[in-house]
Image (cartoon, rainbow, N blue to C red; front, side, top):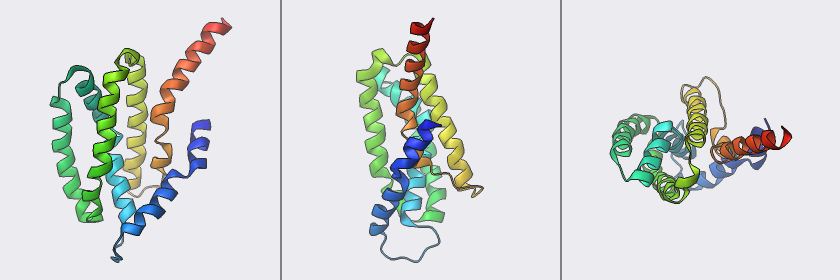
Length: 169
């Protein structure tokens, strides 16, 4: 619960929406530029396949999974572009930065990425993806971008919980 409060306090999504809507060329569309970019970025970046593919490429050099994911993302992007327009094209920039950072990070963090940590990161990403799908279906409006820090904080909280249980016997 504290993770949600911390992320919501930072108002990541609202600040990014304000900044990104400056790039919208005044088109009167139902969906905003920033909403499309954020939706595409989150769809392409928070799933388990993204995390697993970038870790696999960084650790072993095997690109098969990330190439399969890129092919699936192409078809998803085509569908999203019909609803959100050109903003889907611009999602490639943060996508490249995010996935490149994960791949390079996996190279250096390999000794620390045991199976428990990977499972926590993948399950956190899966929960975020579930929330995003609820947003896309317009069932609810969850500010998923505000919850993205959980991908980084969840493993630390897990390790802290283990540490506390060891010292409290």
